[in-house]
Length: 160
Length: 140
Image 1 (cartoon, rainbow over the protein chains, first blue to last red):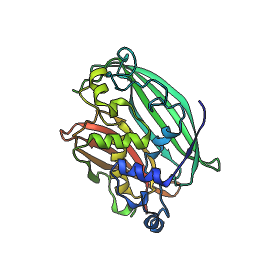
Image 2: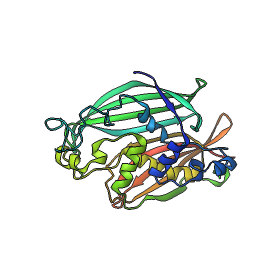
Image 3: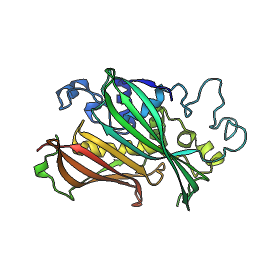
Image 4: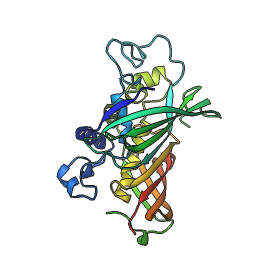
């Protein structure tokens, strides 16, 4: 898989913190952050997920000139009913070497991990796929490791 | 405002309400910033009529982010060494979520004091939507 370059920016961090409803000044107030223990603005713990913004081929972002599977004139912009509910996120794990900061330019490399299957009463056969992403900074130093597990279901999950 | 090993004991808990009456707009706000525009989170027509769910639902990563707010308020900024979750149930518009961290161990590794936490986020019906673990550096 190609490496992705992920520039960490203060505005992006501010917007991310807003979306999770986190008013901690360390995510948006440079002056307050400077006086805090961490000495400047840092990114929230799950911010690295926003690397998707920098993946040119990310499949869950509409792209000009390409069909999008969400609704428009019809419930789905892709012919026929989608084969399943598509992928869902089952697990996410992070290991931190240091916090991400505005000005960091990260290089992210994702490798496939394990794959396994399980039967579920609520959604039929589940197929799990692991992906491990290493985030390195502008000096080549490893700053964090992310391990995500995605699951595809045979049918939509019963609300239960 | 980091935690101190001397003031912590196994079984201590910290809880916060991390969202009340989750709005579809907040889900869209998260979609916009994270870059994940999956219609399952942003498009009610697609989600009901094409995908077969009752409505859009939150990104698992939004629930992880909401849980992280409780976690960093508890352990302090830039203190985490590990943070991992499993998404055990979907989170729907209108849900109110409470997150709890429970101290599982206080230990030392290479001279650094650490706390291991068990995490749980539950909805207004007491159903767990996220379970997880975290480790943070603490003071002596």
